[in-house]
Length: 188
Image (cartoon, rainbow, N blue to C red):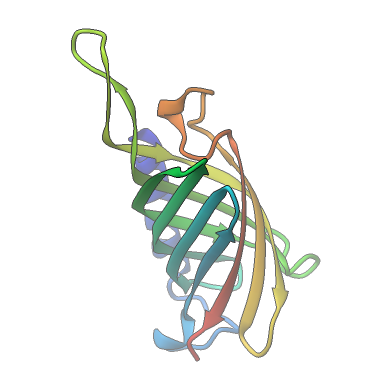
């Protein structure tokens, strides 16, 4: 919860200081909007599908923020049987290009997300139950964007989940390191 408050404070600070700045993204609200997201597929004994759309707003050349959703499907096959699970959730994020004149394609990324997932949870008398629960995460890290046409970018990010303490209850990613590949398209 503390991380969520920090992200919200950063967004409010950026709104108050950067919302009137002129940018290369245009001077109207619509010309500063972008959409995109991450998409992942994996097939075989372990099948995974990840669809994570997002929408953001460029406050200026340096700072942007937005919201996104996530849907993940997993299937593990063993012999003639299989296990399936669906995860879903939402996120708020902020991105900054710290050196826009020198390294315009390198950005810092931070977010707060909460994913509803199925896992073993300790019950009131010490027994474990398999049930749905929410798992928060605070991934922060660095990304690279590569131009993919006019006002579009491919992105790749390496993030570290600040809330991952090595337990199953602290992360859905199987460790603190998270890799993401995506696409961003401006709406002007």
